[in-house]
Image (tube, rainbow, N blue to C red):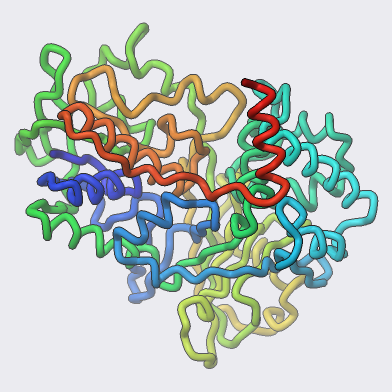
Length: 469
């Protein structure tokens, strides 16, 4: 079996198929695995993530993938969320051990001093509406998250300092361009349905180190992983997959193929008529992309004590203390990584302008950084980081079983039931592997169920389901 693309979708499908007993050959044009969720080495030897990626407790398939890759022990989970406002005040949120979902976050939420009482009452009203509807409030199919929040009478500060803070980071898009269904699903699965859904998992190693176990899992079962081996063309004859041609001219034969590449790349690999009017791929041009910017800063002294901070009222959304996360002993230096999702305004800015902006914002929340010397810095702009979760985008997302026999599709942009996340990418890989095996009469289940519903959320979701039947 052939897998094209070594991102999370391709790796998930390849490892699943290898464990099912198939001989898998995976081709990746880059010199490393992980796709957009990887790391690379700078000329001076420092290894940096292209952007800091995190997981949540509700990401059950990503957790399963890390288990298959032998990387479970390389993810460190945090039960407490840390926030900081413009003047440096710290706040935190953590689940209660005695209140059932969806009330388990209520004590921390009530004490969240970054929001006024009016803000918190408005947010509680909207969260309760989500929970009582079992995560599926009526009338959300064609509206944006911002429109739904307006419908729910949210205050400006509640929108800016709560809903936007969570959702722009989770979905890489502004609220006015995000489908309400996606935004509501984030809060349902992460904060309301299960006590552990909100827990943040952060890699304690550079991202590329998470995937070495995938290479081993494939090789141990007779397959191989080929890096720096791009595919130039996927051959289709009489409506069936007929092999692939590498960029070096080599022809590859296989019984079936999973193509796990970005939606912007796929049309160039397949016959052009598939992207023309009436073709199976024509809708892909309707899927827009959103950018993410990662900023890496190395200071000559420690400037931050928390493992991470979520910023309120700033362009920068997250700051990660990489020195602490990697378990490096406290010393004379500190490495921080900053993340800005939906960073449209930064795309045209120079590297130095972005660094200066981030340093000025750090000075507001980390006083020790004001006098610290910046030893080096780098900026990574992922212009096509994710697909934009706009209302109606689901009708353009393709299923894993393509219109070409024995050719299957994987990628967070395919129909997974999730937005453009690492969880969505892994889900797509598992679904593609399931479809391939079913096509060969060897059905097998890889997709993991969501976290179980708990407490009142479980009761209300059952009631909603019963009313619909």
